[in-house]
Length: 178
Image (cartoon, rainbow, N blue to C red; front, side, top):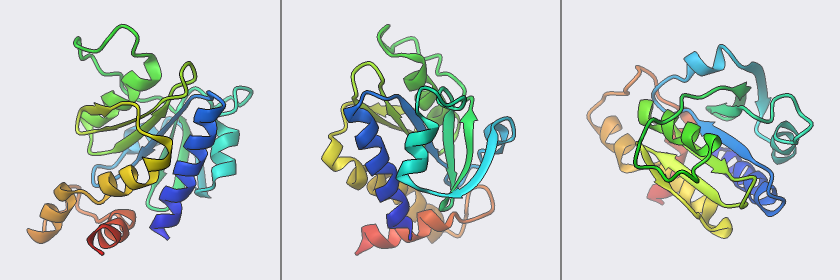
C-alpha cells in the first residue's frame, strides 16, 4: 500500500512537471506536521494522482500551498510551509522550493517540489535540496528517502522520534530492505 502512495505521488508529479504545473508535497515522517495541517484545508483522502493534479491546478484555491501526506492519506492541502532563510540559495530559487527546503530544515519530512517555470522536480530532506530529479527515477528516489538510514537506526534503538511510528515509513523500509 505504501508503494502505491509513492507511485501515485510520483505519477502526479511527473505529469505536472511535463505541463509545468507547480506542486509542493510533503511526506510526514516521525515529526508531526500538525502546525501546518491545522492552518490548512483538511482533506483526509486516499492519495490519488488525479486528486493531486486537481489540487495543484492553477484554478484551484489550494494550488499555491502544500499538500501534506500523513501515513497513506492526503491529510491537508493549501498548507503554508516555513521558508528557508539559507542565504547560499541562488536568487533563482523560488518560494515553492524555499518552502520545501524550509520544512525539511525544521522537520524530518521529505518534500517534493515541481517548478512551474522549468518543470524540474526537486526533493528536499534534512535541509538538503536534490534538484533535477529525473522523472523516471522519482519513485525510486522517494522510496529511498522515505525508508532511509535514519529511520532504520531509530527503529533499531527503539526510539521513534515523536513517539509514534509512521506506517508508510515501516512499509517503505521493508520494500527497500527487499
